[in-house]
Length: 131
Image (tube, rainbow, N blue to C red; front, side, top):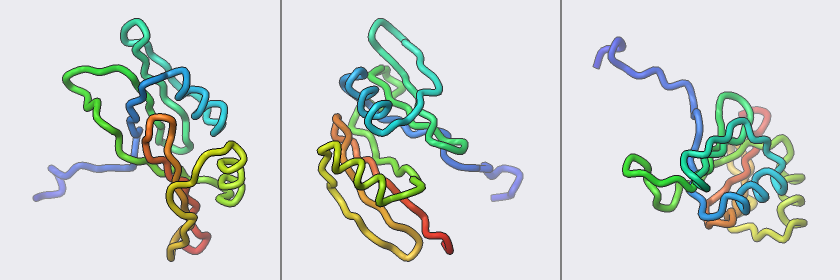
């Protein structure tokens, strides 16, 4: 395939999580994790799209809106880069949230995972300085 027909993918724009309770999701992502909403749209009464700024060009989108064009099944996981993984781990444990995977160390990073209130996988990631 020639380079003129190739896509120039620059990164993740957003990851979509389908949620069942928008108020509960806002409390978890906004209050517990401290993420800041950068866009909110109500597509229909009570049917929301809420985006959280997660740094850089990426956003985390939460929605309870369903349409034939959107997949309303369980969402894939998303990894959030954090500046201090140990602090993130302490914060999650202090909130009484179960760590479902890790913490783990890999050649380029450290990470652990939890589930959000809808059972979506949420990974916390910290790249090692030399990686």
